[in-house]
Length: 338
Image (cartoon, rainbow, N blue to C red; front, side):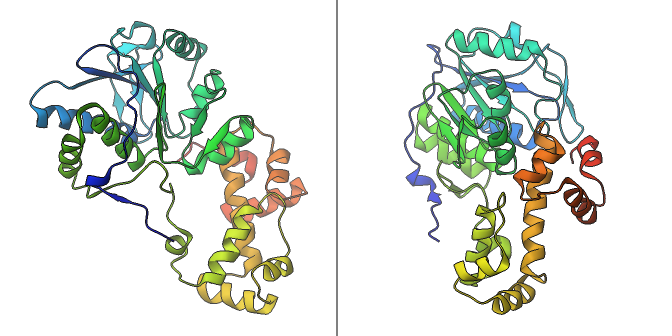
């Protein structure tokens, strides 16, 4: 697989989002309960550093919440905000929603109506991590591409099948800025800094974070299978790829062997040697992991999730789930996400 990461001096060129007429770029960050503190830092800290390096105010950012109340991040830290969404000054022509696990929990009707009002007034709306769930529920992603953290993409696609989920790390367009979360948020902000004030400043900011490579929008969100599986065995990688593409309608081990041009016995030996588990067991683990994501990120019933992950019986699904995770699917759904 070709490494598509880019050196800092080969950053792709992007059209900057709508920042308004001010010389200072104003960006508001809407904090959703249980938001990712790391994603927020990756979004806001580059702007602070850019101001410091330029020795003038190039960017101004503020923290917002639905009603102006403090918001608690997923790490338990409570953060004060400057404004409610309704009171956000008009200078802020780019507003980015930052969320985390269970993005819709704690969101009231006011949040969705205010986001719709901002969109109607021409504000560029963005989202980070699982924030696309919120913009989608507000009806603001029709005809748009959605960038969602890879762990939440299955749940998003199940909930909003008509919205195109793209695997990019981030998107920067005239009316949309969005990132998958984590370090992709830093990549997005460095590209925004470049779009607004040039590559030299973007490079200087990246180096302040000892960040030697800025990944492009279309770089993969996840590590390659080779890295995740810690193997160079092409047949194993190919077989796992086939498994990941066939979670809803699982293939038999015989079918997997045929597609990977192997025998069942060879496949059994390969998985046992490289991963320490039989292929059937590994395949089931992949399906159960997807089921866990859907449980925690959608309102689908346990039976609907079971079927979408290739389990034809809710009883068998529940037994397998309890065996792997030590808790029933319905009980796991009630537990706070870690």
